[in-house]
Image (tube, rainbow, N blue to C red; front, top):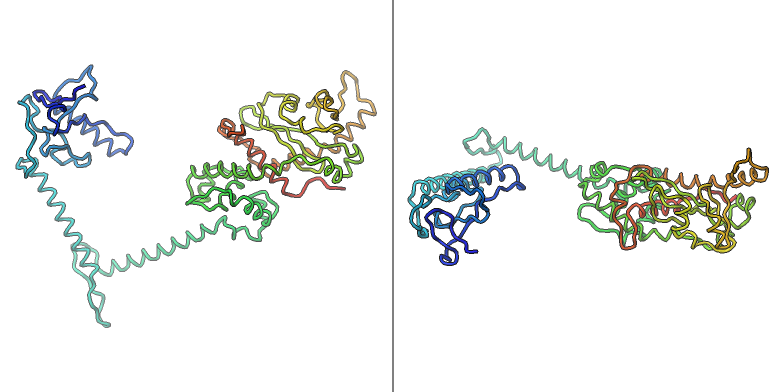
Length: 466
């Protein structure tokens, strides 16, 4: 398509008059502030008024005005509203094809007025700089002489300026003091020797454990220009431990809310990669050697796990099955499932059964009807007895259920420890933590559950050996 000037009577074309510029009708700019939107709207309206044409049923984006209709041969900047070339003004009323203007000192009234205004502004700037130079030039002084004052056209004198300087220095000193206090908050020094604070904010038992975790993660933690790596770890642990909002953490650490969200996700990826091995399935020999006496008395040394799960407030999400050893540590956790998925279906499809060996004994609740699946692996499962239409349980069933209840209480204690220590698992989780998965098909929520269980495993067990 040939680009040509849309002014009536102007026959300039881009393929012929190649030394000219061809400008579109200015667009309304809405993403650079109210002032920019106001100026661009006013300029667009004036350009259309100068053309004096109707563009109904026409694509106004194809309208062009050549530079021959501007005083200096080009349009002015948007913010230079007093410039005569802010809108086209030459040969706009059906005159013969205009010639490109000669770029010399114009004598038109609008140009002269614009040039005089620029000269006045420049003179005022020069006078202001000269007055500032006189105020700062104190000159030589005698010991007994008073502080000299330069005469000015304002109410300020030299003494007033000196007082302002002292106030500025005091404010700068106070600002530095506040910055130093803020930098010490949540730093390594702030937690040193304060195990109670460490446990309250992070869920870890001591400052020593916190530093071990930090040194273990340090080579893999992301770096940032606005927050240290130690504070990144503390921020993430505080959100897991206390379920604090992004807005509150942003205020406490002096960063933006976007930084808090980004740091939490990145640090969680790092912690999952490094702490994931701490939730592991122990060897049978290790389990038998460390089997608590309460389990040995009721079930011998065959118990390898106690299985259970709990729900989360995320659009009917059910937290994956937990496999807890008799020693009170979490040794297996699967990925999350939908809230309507049965316990039996989750257990049979989450990979838990692949960990079993012949002769293993599993303790479970009534919802885990997995006797057939476990039996196919030459293992067994012990669940509380059902009445199945009977008026009451037999004496043998009552005794079996009592023994199972005595040890299953440890499952509730371990799960309770995980949820009490890290209350993030009790609140409503953002849906994005469940929607997006990494290359290994893990969601952010899956990683959070693994990390919380790994951190609990670092603390002392709730099940005593005796």
